[in-house]
Image 1 (cartoon, rainbow, N blue to C red):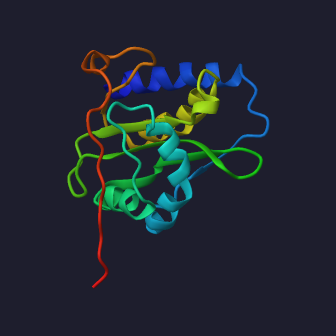
Image 2: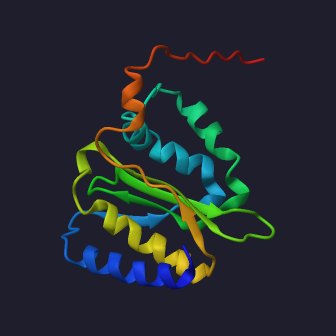
Image 3: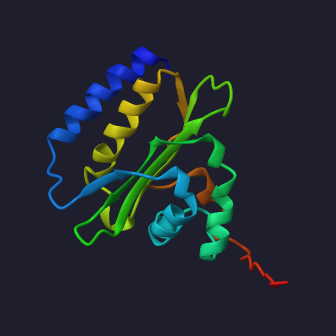
Amino acid sequence: MPIPYLQEATKAIRAVSKQHDSTGISMRQARVDEIVEEMQYIYECALDVFSDNYGFSRVSREEFIQAFLHLGPLLDSRLFHFMTNVEDVPIAFVYGYRDSPENPTRIVFHTVGVSSKHRGEATVYHLAVPFWEAAVEIGLPAVGGLAKEGRTTFDKCGPANRSYSVLAKKL
């Protein structure tokens, strides 16, 4: 998405967000310099978010963290946000990153995750506002993919035919 499109889309998303009540919801940027702690914080929310994905297999907290550590050099706090409820429990998150730590040419909109309880609400609009504003501020074009609710191509494959176990031995 070119920068002018990002600017216009940000205005539209902000307008929709303002039309919906966000009482009891808080938002903050992730502390990417403390990525391990932040991933621990959203672990349960992320499992809920991903549990509807085809072939989902529950992973340990440690494996979840390991899966994201490689993104560390690309992450920017402005592109990683958490949304929490009044009990400070994560209910949604969004993250993206620059495509290169040294010579970025674009921003990758990677994941928007909303817990199952909050899907169908305006949560995604509230979450998108600071994320898209940051993309405009950074000034790089953006790419990304969106998934839709409901039936997908993967549904034709039927239920998953296997599960995975990850074993570890401390040395």
